[in-house]
Structure formats: structure tokens, C-alpha cells
Figure 1 (cartoon, rainbow, N blue to C red):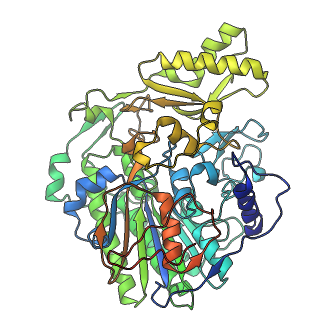
Figure 2 (figure 1 turned 120 degrees about the vertical axis):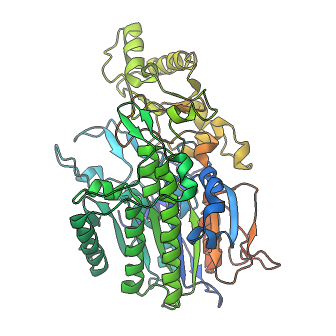
Figure 3 (figure 1 turned 45 degrees about the horizontal axis):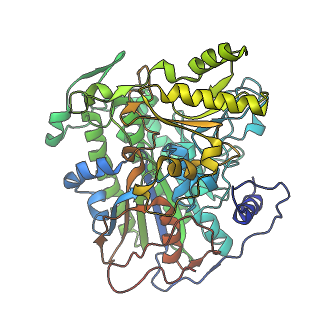
Length: 559
């Protein structure tokens, strides 16, 4: 989708009075945006998202950090940031960071959703795919930002001044695309055995050089990472289903690209590619500021595959701290005046098998009774309906859809019955219908006080959301059967998945720590003000945060 069409959709969102439905007749008019770059503005914004880096993990390891994280804690520290919505997954979380909008307005309500109008392939739609370019039977989807309904900071910057460079790199396509947006000068993500880019684009020299380095590492393999002394208490085996985890040290066998991807090596390679692109694109050297978005994915892969409290996570965060320190030191050597924001797309939760040994005996794995199939079987028999596909979902919690050919009255009865059945289950906290969520006003209070309905409202967009939403109780992990690479997860409306750190840093700034809650949607307006970018009123769900710890106010440039 072109940037013009994307911004036209955004205008339509702003004009909508209740729900952000997008009229097909939206005029292709770009919103007015201007930029008066302050003399002391950073010439490069480095926006870093660490996938599954919860506020809990940040607090747990903060005293251990000596590298990049330690530097950032000397800036403006918001330890109680919030991905305030309920759909705490990678794609929605990344969509909030540089758009300044919640998933209700970005349109990215989950990593994937059901679209029963899809005629090619499965009706599960990935958040970063262009379904219109699917080929029959093809599993190699075409990565795209077609579902993102609002502009990113980089797009606003380019709209104000086309000379601005908007670059994004990530271990995942959705991380790069949701932070970069539609108009990205260079964008890369890990795919297969190296970094790839959008269809129709050539791999540039920087990415080619990085891929060559990765190929050499894969050819030789690599020894395991050292185990820091403070990690030893976590270094013990835990059995989860068919796998044993907890004591892995990330040895790399020659040719094992998957092991490279799910280790600290991926983050190091992503940062190295970002640095190569700084040089190739001369970022931070122009008359107007540039933006480099870096989404680091390994923490999420480690969290899913081994949980948050084993030796693997301890090693991962130690290595990431070192890699960030090296990255910042390299920027320093280049003499670039840069400002950094670091946050996360969501938090995470450990596996029940280990939590049972750590004073959380109430944690459990979800049962099959909550599944869409179980609901379909029960309600299909009750109403004499075909059970196959009666109720659809893409997981054991979150959005559920009813078969679209059902009459409206019958749909209402099925939603009511599903709600009654599920809420009688001891693992389910609440079920909210789409009508209940849509009728809930968008919350305006501090995010830690939001009701579950308000958290759901911040995730709800009628273009993609389901007929009802299922929230499991605290501590119930929506993985019924753990296996290789998938023993723990996130995605709940609970604060262990919502709370993330937000750290701003720039050389010479007066740092401070603000423990009160802020939101990730506050990042984009704060950065816009930092570089003198004036965005139309109402463009953001978030607010500008004053990043000056002294009497000055960095929000003076935003209106």
C-alpha cells in the first residue's frame, strides 16, 4: 500500500466519531505536518524494541547490567511503562511504539486473525502479510504493511522532509514493518539463514555483508556462551512435556540456522546490521534527523522456547546488555548526535512447571475445554448445526469468531451460550462480546487502573476483531501441550504481559526516574517533540512526555 493511501486511511480514522471504520471513499489527502528542527535536536533517533522484555525482567536484572542497559538507566527511566491493551503480542505491541496509537486505531489487533472472506489458502491472516498476493497452496507469504492503518514516526518525518531516512531492522518481519511503516527506505529481517527484505527490493551492500558474516559463523559453528556466576542458581533442568529446558548455554552446531536465530547471536547480528546501515545510509549526518528502528527478537524466542527464569534467559540478557553497549560505543565513535528510546512490545510469563517450584502453584496450562473446537462441538449439537468451523479461533484465548453464514439472531444466542459455558470453566476469567467491547469508551485514566473491558477496547477494531474475546485467569498459560520452541508465552491482559520499561537516553541529558505509569503510545509524540516535528492535533492516542529532568520542557514543540 502506498504512503498516500495509508495516510488517507489515517485521515478517515481521525474523522470517525465512534469506531475506527475506514470509509472506502477516503480522499487521498496527506495531513499537514511541519518540522522546525531545534538547534539542539538529535540528528538520529534510535528506537529499540526488545521482544518480550517485561518490566519484571528489567527489574530482576537491572542491578546486573553493566553495558548498554546501564547507559540507558542514566537517562529518563520509566520502569512502569504499559502496552496498555489486552492483545499483548508482537505485532500489536510493535504497532504502538512509533505510531503513538493503540491497536484499536492501528488495526493490528493480534499477530493473526480470522478472515472468512479469504478464498486462497487458510482463513488465518498474518498481521504482516498481503493476502491479495497469496498463491494457492503457498506457505511463503508476501510480507507487507497493508493492515497498518496509521503512519509511523518515520513516515511523518519523511512527510515533513523527504530527505529524512527511515530505516528498520529486526529478527522478525513484523517487528521491522510495524515500526518502519509503509514508507521505509531500507528494511530487513531474519529469514532462513540471513536477512531478507520486501519483495521487489534488492538486498543492499550492508545486508549482503552482514549475511556473509553470518554464513561464515554458520559454517564453523560456535561454542556455548559462558555462564555468569549470578546465573548459576537458574542453571537447572526443568521438564515441560516432551522437552527439557533450563540449563541450555546456546552451543551452535555448524549449519544450524535455527539455533542461531533462537540465541543471543541473532540480536548481535541485528545490531551489527543496523550499524552497517548507519554507515551505508549516512544516518545522522544530514540536515534533518533520521530514524533507525531496531527490533531485537531473541529474548522472545528464548522466552517461548525455555521460559523467563532459566539459565537461557540469564545468558540472553547478559549478552544483549553487552551487544547494546558495543552498539552505542560504535555510534559514539562515529561522532553521531543520537537519541535512544528502548522499550518492549509486550512482557512474558514463565512456564507453569517451574512456577510450581517458585511459589506460584496456581499456575497451569489451559485445558482443551476452552478451545474453539470444544465449543463448536457442544454448541453445534445443542442447536443442530454443523460443528466443523462453527466457532473459530487462532489460539486458546483472545478473539473467537462465529461462522459468518449464521443469522444475526442465532449468532447472538451462540455468543451468549459460549459466554455462559466458558465463564463456568475455572480457567476462564471473563468472556466479552464484541458489542460489549464496542460499547466501552476508550479509557482515559492511568493504564494500571483499566478494567478488562477497557483493555479489550484498546485492542478492538471491527475490521479484524472477533465476535467475542476470552480472557483466561491470571497464571493460566494458553499452551495446552508444550513442545520444542514453545513452552511459555504471553498474550494475556494481565500486567505481567502489559508492563514494559521505557527508557530514553541522550548524551548530556539530565536523567530522572518516573515510577508512575506511562504508555508506549507516549513514545512517538515524545520523539516528535524532541526533533521539532509538529503533527496534526489528535494524531496520537498518547501524550508527549517531558524528557528534560530539569526546568526545561521537551514537549514545547508539539501542538
